[in-house]
Image 1: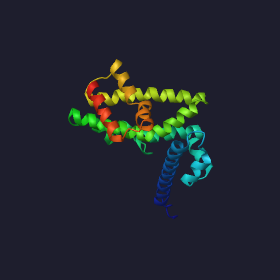
Image 2: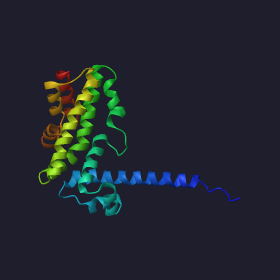
Image 3: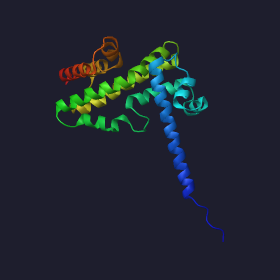
Image 4: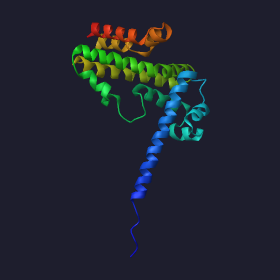
Length: 207
C-alpha cells in the first residue's frame, strides 16, 4: 500500500508564499507612498520604487499593472495607514467616532482627520500633478473626492448620531479636505496641534 502524500507541507508552503506576497506588496506600497510624496508623479519612477522596496520592476508590474495602478493603490494605503485588507470603517479609530461623549467623539474625529491628511496629502499632490496630463487619472481623482464625501457623511453620522446632509455635509467635506490642509499646514506652516484645534472648533460649530 502506497503511503499517503503529505499535505501539511503543501499547506505550510502555500501559507508562507501568501505571507511573503503580502509582505512584498506592503513593501512596494510603502516605497511608493514615500517616493510619490517626495518626488511627485513625474519625478518618481517604477525603477526607483522597486529599488527602495528591494524588488524587481517586473514584480511591480505583476502586482499593480502600471505606474497609474500603483499610484491609486498607494493613495488607498495612505488613507488607512497600511496595506491590510481591512476597511477603514471597521478599524478601531473609525469605531471610536461613535464612542464616548460628544467632546470625545469630536476630538477623535479631529485626530483621524489630521492623521489621514498627514498620510495622504503628499500622495494626493502627486495625483493632482498626474491628473493635469492624464484624463484617466483626473477622472479617478474626481471620483475619489466624490467617494470621500460619502465617507464624510458616514463618519459624521456616527459622530453626531444622525444623518448629515445638505449644506452641513458640503461644509464638512470641504473643511476637512486635502486642499485646506495643504493651505494651512503645508503652505502656511500651521502645527499639527493648531490644525487639530481648528478642526475641533469647526466641528463644534457644525455639530
